[in-house]
Image 1 (cartoon, rainbow, N blue to C red):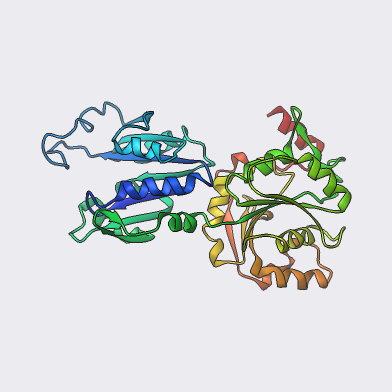
Image 2 (image 1 turned 90 degrees about the vertical axis):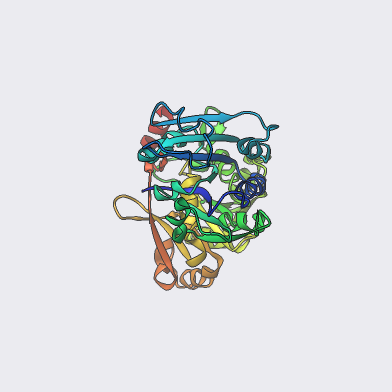
Length: 375
């Protein structure tokens, strides 16, 4: 089964229950915070027979001449469902028509046309049988569910009643459930001993790597905090990052300089505006927002949700931390511990494998830096 953590999938037990209206409202709510795509999926069953919608049909099924077909909606003024999704604020709207035995291949082809760092809002019942979305919402009517809905109804994360043809839910609240407010923390206070120069000041083609990270994280996070080791470095970074991104940005000094990365996380999180904080480092130049969403899905139930690399090692600098863990961090700091994982045994920790690791780079040495520049 294909896992798509940045996907909100919306189904319904029957027609005219408000599924598309909910999609429109979700896109409108999400587009104010993050890039978002609208997707309509039509799964076409083989074997002929009458049109499932009744009558002679619209020609969609009979016109499919390959395993799948992807078209883009360009008209935000029309009356079609895809036009409404585009008018709601979607960066792009695509329609996937796909044979039932090729849904995964068709979805992979569609994903190649989308920015993996955006949220996707898609409408389909049948798609749930082939993919694992970040959230599956089913709009439920009074009547008997149609077969495609009955097959996946038990998989729904949320069942929402339809009242007078509209889903009885606040779409803004649903969007916040999927993407709750959180802070992003970027640590820069390391000694950079193996690199031989301050990694926070690395540039590619005259543009700061740190600035790129901050702006990238700002697409999902509600604020970005950059952790500096001391006031001198903080002043340099404030100048470097002046005007970066559109989200609130602050540079915070470690409470006690020279005490290692656990102190950096603790100091930044103490000033965070939100209970959840995604923590990364300035030497991970392209943090994946899709991976961040995969971690975020477990963050509400844990104190730490940490990435596990292919060799089984936990990467504590690609993790969500809850402010509820701050007292345990402080206790370990008071005992002289500097390693981040030192407090993990005292809190609720969930490990998430690093899926699709092609994006991951860690710039520790001059050789790492040269390879990154060449790529």
